Image 1 (cartoon, helix red, strand yellow):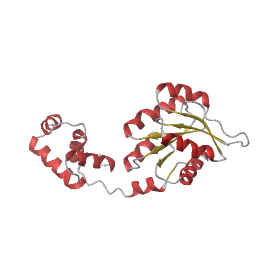
Image 2 (cartoon, one colour):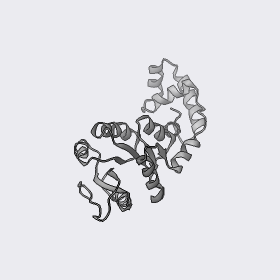
Image 3 (cartoon, rainbow, N blue to C red):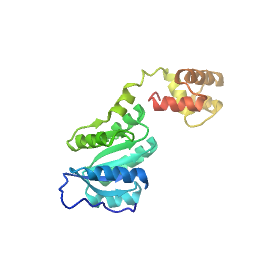
Image 4 (cartoon, rainbow, N blue to C red):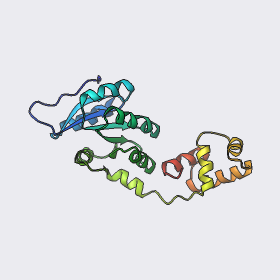
Length: 214
C-alpha cells in the first residue's frame, strides 16, 4: 500500500486520530484496517518509520502512533524520532517479541503500551483505548512474559562478561577488555550457558538478553 493518509467512512466522527507505522506489507495493512474499522478511531496515516516519514507524520496530527517494531535496536531509534516529530502524541509499540527486555525498553523510552502481534484484534483495540484515555498499559501476553522472567541468576561479573560477549568478541578479547584471565572468562561463559541454556554461547547470550538479565 502506498504511503498516503487513510480516509475514514464519512458517516462517523472518530475521537482518536491514529497513525500506523511499519514496513509496507500485509501486517501493516491488516493492523490499519482493524483500527480504521473501529468507530472511535480514525487512521490518518499509514507509512514507514524512516526520516522522511517522520517529517510527513507531523502534518497528519495524530493523537496516537501505533508502530510495528521487530527489534529492540529499532525501538531505540524509532521511538525517540517519533517523540521529536510528534512530541505530544502517545506511542504504542507493536512487537512479535513481547519479552521482559522489550517491555522495559519501551517503558524507558516512554512508550505508553507494548502490544504483542498475536493478540486478538479486540485486545489490541482495548489497549489503544486505554492509552487514548491517558493510561499506560500492556496486553496480557506481554505482561505474562514480564512476570515469567525469573530473578536474575547471573553474578555481576557474569553479566559483565555476557554483555561484552554479546558484541561477538572471542574469549581472549573479552579477557583483555575486562582485565581477566582467558580461563576465567571461559568459566563465566560456561556458567552463563548452564544458567541461560542454549546450544552455544551466542544462544545463551540471546536468551539472557531476552530475559532482561543483561
